[in-house]
Length: 331
Figure 1: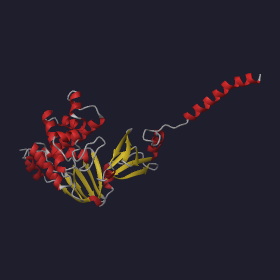
Figure 2 (figure 1 turned 90 degrees about the horizontal axis):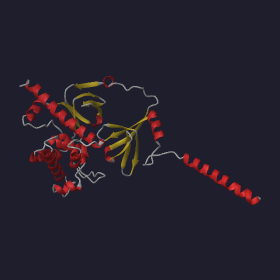
Figure 3 (figure 1 turned 180 degrees about the vertical axis):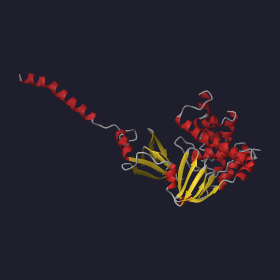
Figure 4 (figure 1 turned 60 degrees about the vertical axis):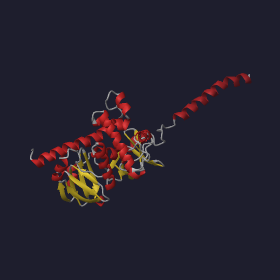
């Protein structure tokens, strides 16, 4: 009888152990694929602090989360993780929101709180220490720095980074417009790179300002940068593109700019000077543009890339025509 009783207890013991095992596994919190904090903790953190990346060019990027790694600075924004080169990020700042006001202050009262010295209600150039300069639609200069607007964006540059602020010379702009080129005045911060861009643009028939915008977006003028997909140098040429245009040293500025400019020229000819399709092809590949019926592919990165550069390129051309018309009295 003892043997029968032991046999009857065995299923009950197995059932009890199975329930305990399920309870243990159910208590394991979910985490994302990179091993960061669970999303519930991230949502809670959003309510108590704001995380932003202070970039080396003086601007800020608001993100949902950020963490350091051997590859660089990883950050998450809108549910997508991105990797930023370490040399582009000055610091990661975490700002407590516990005592923050529920509504952000509008820009105008914020500007008024600074001791103003000069106001530029027309286009101006902000010259930075080191040679680079920033184009502004309008700017307010104070002892603390400069608030400026460019398109839909409002940004602040600290005084320690600024050399001077000057209004744009409309007469010189009118003279440059007589050449028929969209050259609103720009600089990479390096006279050598500026000259190489203009030389390649003139040689292959591509607007230097378009080359400048693509280079700024692709590499931020870093000659040594290499993407995760293997694109290299200033214009981020893939190995196949470098081979197609005879670029043997993709980190050499002259060769890289020449190859990138020739590629832009080929795309301009192929897509009848449709700048949006040219940019989409440069980012996602011309095959993707053709596959989607000669339209910008529905990729988030590609559409953001095309929108960002197209807006600046188109807006610059419009402002140039408006300023020249105002200077010449509509003649």
